[in-house]
Amino acid sequence: MQDQAFRQYYVDQNLPVARAAIGIGVVLLVAITILDMFLMPEAFIEKVVPLRIVGMLIPMLGVVGATFLLGQRRWFPYLLLSMAILVGVSSHVTGYMAVKTGAEMVFGAAIFLTFSIYLVLGLSFLQSAAACWTIYAAYLLIGMGMSMPVHDMSYGAFLLGASNMIGSFASYRLERNAREIFENGHALRKLSRTDVLTGLFNRRTFDEHFAKAWKQARRDDKQIAIAIADIDNFKLYNDCYGSAKGDECIKVVAEALGAAVSRPLDLVARYNGAEFAMVLYDPTPAFLESFTHALCHKVVDLDIEHRASETTPTVSLSVGAAIATAASATPEQLLRQADDALYEAKSQGRNRVIVYRTEWGQQTTSHLAAVLL
Image (cartoon, rainbow, N blue to C red; front, side):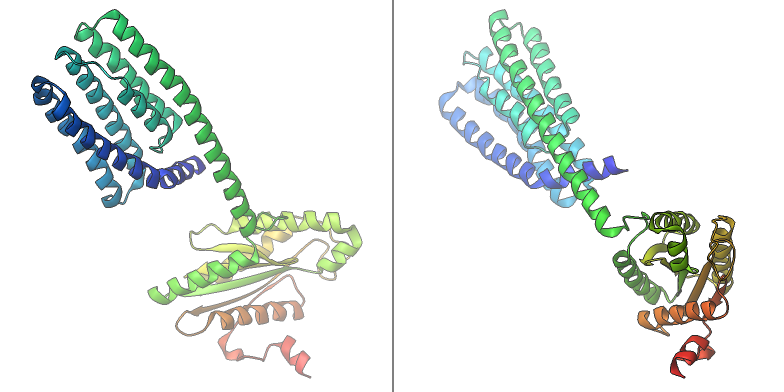
């Protein structure tokens, strides 16, 4: 999956350069053709100009147009690869026609094309090598088919072979450097989105996902739920077993919660210390109830000893949840309701689930009532 993402990144990064290179190639091709019309024999012009138009100019213009018109950019490397081979073979045929009509064969065009394929078209190392060595083989086959002098063929084969070797090395280095930049950037983006200790998403990512899910639910007129889970008596656990064991406890609980969230638009994040938050997209009330109760059972089933707990002899979880349609509440209200439900779960003895009920109003949980007294 990451390799596919890199390929897309590599194409996108090199696309502007590839367009510019092909555009320059079109200008040079037209200029050379005009120059040939003044300098080359008429027999050469009659044979070569149509070939250049069909085998070189049209494919180059077609590929440039495709880069603007086609939305699926994953096909671009294959278009570029096909164009490069067609242009390269046409260039060889043009060169041999020049010799047949009494003109000198020029290898500069083939060498220029070789380096362009390796360095500026944005092809991968394997793709560019496949194109250039195919062009190299075509040079030999066309030369033998047209009975070119061995000395001329050998000289051209040496130059093109050397160009391929240098170009291959340069292309490999370019792709490797680009992959390092991509992977470093991917790692940095992952670090910015995930919690270092647990590997779950962090609060920033939770907030971003929640905002997007809320907009989606509002558009689709769906329900959205928030569940906030807190490890019971975690401060006492840390005091009893030490911070290293505390971190290990958080990691094990986080793994269990992460495994429980699998639907595409759902998300679980480490929210704050020993607290975790979940976004659940379009759950039914029954699903929310069963899901949150299953979380409590999963954590108890981990059987992590907690001698200092005031609730159970093992690590347990308190969960508060709230559900609403996006049209009937605000994201802030839903989060506050889930938080109120969590405190209600704690006030009722922990190791339990409380789902917020709309009849509570805004400040009528037992926790808030105790605070207000």
